[in-house]
Image 1: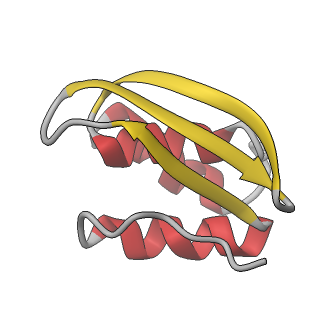
Image 2: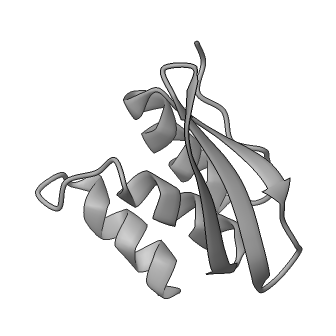
Length: 87
């Protein structure tokens, strides 16, 4: 299965690369342009694992979802955490 993230911004290329490495698929349930309540389905290895509700941007919601599958010793953890914090 190919990991995918809906294309919305330049930052998504980096998020899509991290998701593909972890075999995670993120699907929009309810997302808004700009800041708002984002709801995203998370699937790992083709099976639905979780539904995330995050207040922020779409990229922040994707990064928050990927943080759930990333240990803080992995190099991409700092990148994902910076996205979630809006840095």
